Image (cartoon, rainbow, N blue to C red; front, side, top):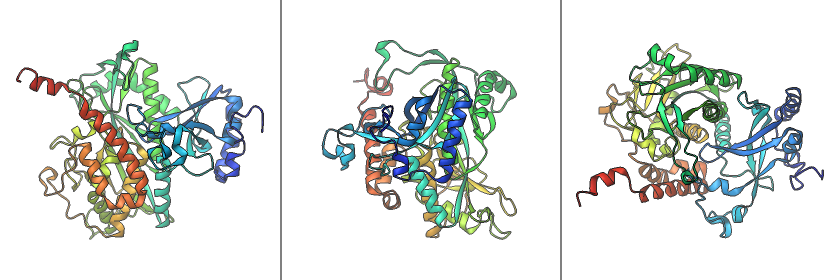
Length: 488
């Protein structure tokens, strides 16, 4: 054991458990060369937790080689926290309330860097970054790793000869940070939200005037995001005050989810450093602000030929039969999948009729009121579907995995989505959940996700979501105070 190695004898952890591919081993050597040639001082090592939030540690550059060989330890309690960062399960009981001895007492798990994800952070001087996969100390994969869940879904898709191609359209708000609320009394779980002001009044959808008002911060963001290597495609002004949409070129497999995690993290950090606040919260509780969505464009292509399998023949309508069945699966499991696509209490305030957001599980040709919007047609290699159900706070790995799982079930069982609706807000179709409570109940009853992801993971995630719901229901809201305080 190298005396400088703080990995408790894990110096050969990666090699011993054969955790890297040949491509990763080659990339690791290149990472070490880049760190030295670029004069980097530190490297951040992070994993995406159950909410898609990055957590990790910062390693001095001279310790990176050991960290890549042996991994870096993290506390298992990080895997059982809700969105307030409270530990939901009692880790002091045997099995930590999850029937898992490895979680008892808040022991360690191991982050293993994925060298293929290495970036130099353009906004943080002398700083590199890598995403990590997570393992128990005996080398077994942590079953709560959401990145691993998507990797396994992508592998299952490949076994059937398919590859998922997806593109991101992400709406969010850019605001001026007026007061970060950093007095001791503002600390808490959660802390007092910052005070902000608008950068633009909004209500001028896609006007160049509003775009130019937002350009000072958008310019900063786009330069850093491009330098980061993200596949940025466009920056657009949305209808709401200080609301924008960034779109990205399509990618395959896990790549778009990795890009989304990095994009959200980078955007918040860059904005904060320049006196702004970026929020991916669906519907901020501020006057006049609009709900934000995350629209996921997706298609399947032949893993061998690269052919888009959603493109229909001339007599097949909007989509090929395989594409229609895929849509059938998305619609059939939409309510249960909402826990993955819309995982916050707040996100369900977006599902309202005639608001450019869906309110029921229905598909349509190029109609932004439908949950599924079909685009393209015969002869169009860009034929795809757009799922408009997601919120920008969703865990990208679970969002994409839910689409693969639902879509494959539609293909395997030839689920007919019915005819596309021209009036999606009036269609005779199943309503989307009106609350996270409804969504959790639907997930609990859904056979497909329980069988595919396993009862332990589904019960684990439901437990975390129910803890958030319980905290929400225990709070007295402004609505309640206005409604009852004087009346009774």
